[in-house]
View 1 (cartoon, rainbow, N blue to C red):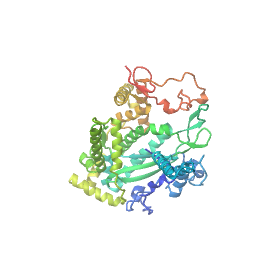
View 2: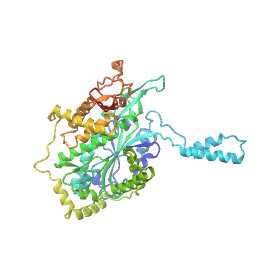
View 3: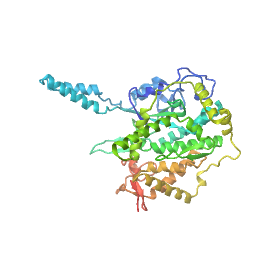
View 4: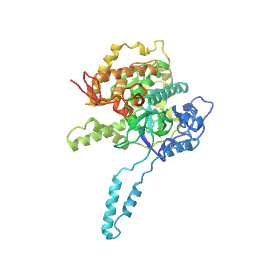
Length: 504
């Protein structure tokens, strides 16, 4: 996830969008723009859409640049242009700050002294970060590389079905965000005020499909930009999303999407999944069993470039500091390597990309790649079983919860609920469920049990809150305690959890 700034921050999403309308006789956006250079236009999604333009925007409808400019750029209704709550705050740029401070200098200063003061001001202001109003949150939903490879070489019909599985998983995770993550704040901040975290009617989002990585490898992914403008369920007013839970839940949402997508692929094609080792300090990657690792490696050019640069940076770190970097430092070095090796984006049509991908895959497989994909996606008679929530016994839930607490405790000294949720999704990745509701139910039960196996560090609420100020989901905590505090850091122990850490 990356934070999107107000103004023209949205424009990068439009740089690769195909200019033509595509063949309207084709059924899906991905196939409709098969022969056009670029990616399909964005589409609207989210249950907050009915509040816009008198309900004239519906799920799946195409997004125009003018609509994006109004909503993301200006915080206005994309149909009527009416303001959605308060306007985005504006902040002075670096040059404006320098100009203001320079104008305030003593006019009696000698020229040499003034030049010295101005140089100091410029250095200070250039070192400061420039604040930008938050217009939205850009979530990138990517399918596993093995699925991208399968999609890349398959025939058009199979490509459409794989894309449908991806879109369905994205929609289900966005709905989960609306239920479990998205909130806003009402009240007054400060020493004498009280801010309450309350529900919203839904989120307003735009989704943009992309086909490939910057290295030209298959990389089916979707950018979903969730607008920072939301309507408060309590009084109908437009406010901003509370960004804290959105940041806290990022990893858990990523793990959930991957698991839900795998469920859809198994239910559609009958494929099975397996974990593959990704090396030290990285979680295993789940891959479609029938997609050989040689194909995955062939189409992982960006990963190789990043790993090579990361390893070089680690060697430089060891030479400078005389020790290996910590896990957190390695993450920063990897992010630095990603930026350092980032090539320019080249725009191609899906037809051009597919032809190239099929030729490369055929050389690895030694056979026709499209025929191979047809064999892999032909639903076998023995389709892997899928589970309903009622199929999972309570003692097994307790066992998995113990593993979740142990794994989280090995990685961190304290943790929050979303850390447990992410690990629960990892532990359940090998399980295939019949629906999102079944997966969500079992994941939630495991996370609840994992909380009970952790030691609470957050102090409990000593006074009961009136029903008016309690959460609608029946939780005993007050709406004046942010939901992020409910995801308290904890540790393994015998007592109920809180902020959590390892207990004895």
